[in-house]
Amino acid sequence: ADGNQITIGVSDFFQQHNGDVAFAEVREVGTAVSTNDGLADIESIKVDIELVSPVNGTIVEINEKLELEAEVINQDPYGEGWLAMIEASDWATDQANLMSPETYFEHMKALAQAEAGTL
Image 1: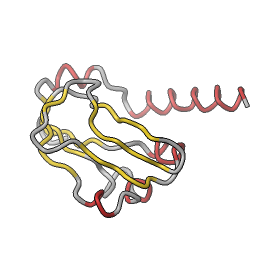
Image 2: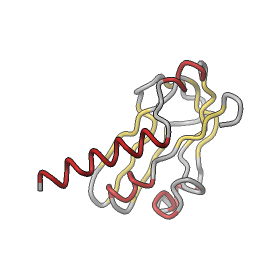
Image 3: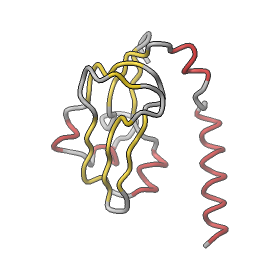
């Protein structure tokens, strides 16, 4: 995050769980998004997913690499594989509603354990 500009991507868990990304399309620069609005469509070998925005704001930049190299999401989800940059309109409020990395890890661990238990 840079001031109110927030870089959005997927987690390492997401990319591992959903398989190799074949296609990723992010909404256009200038698109206003609200929390839970569609932000990007991602197609992997396993699933098609509509990612939603975690914040309210406007898309100010998208990762052009994804058009030709969607697999960069798998190779470097926290670096080159980012999706979009959003200028958050109310970052203080939105930030309070997001999970910390530690909370997210525990949440994903619980999901993975639940999934393993149902197999």
